[in-house]
Image (cartoon, rainbow, N blue to C red; front, side, top):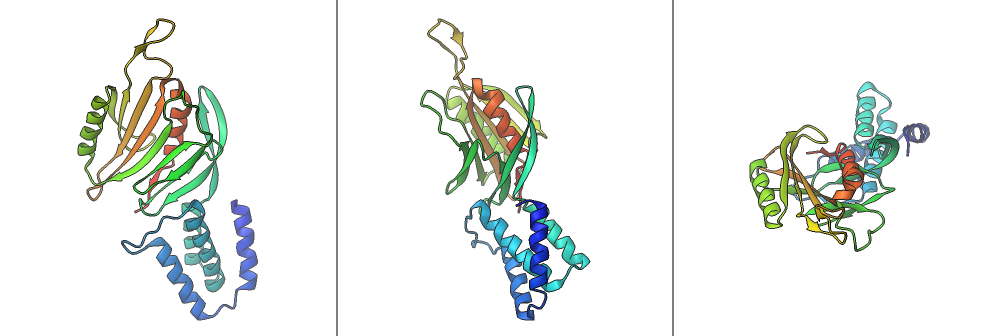
Length: 254
């Protein structure tokens, strides 16, 4: 739903519900408070529609109850800013710019949001992590392509050492380790698989050589987010670049 459609729905609901009882007012605020500030241990994973539709409905009723006062307008605007369901993003892939529609994904347990290009990718939710994978499954000849989002009880330094050990254990060469601000503020670590001799007799990294790229956020309350990107050499400027563009929208919502 775009902003104009949402405004129209709000206006229509205002005309209908301007005489809601005070009991409904209290119930509405309680619902909004529960959605925004759930108690510890009460988080239940919802689909992308869950957070958005619940908050939007509560926001519409809140306007009807309280009227368009300055505080009320500010609150509704904040909700709209935080939970815009869709938006357009300009990206550049292999030297060509394109406009891409992206869709909000939200995880209440891990407490983050991210926008994904749902025409090419889908979110697969897990118990301890989420994975963004191609919408169309790749043929067996291709190495894994995914972006996994995890929250770990560790410091940045501990995770960096753990990741470097993982790369070494998988015989991957460390190619990058540095502090970055883009696509997120954190440390990036990138490893590439070993070369081999192909059918044409060429030795070295090949089109299907696997690449692992990790982003580790700063330590907050003894935890970090780790984003693990898996793709292959030929896909670095395709899937790899698209993963980074999606990661620009990643936001922790603690």
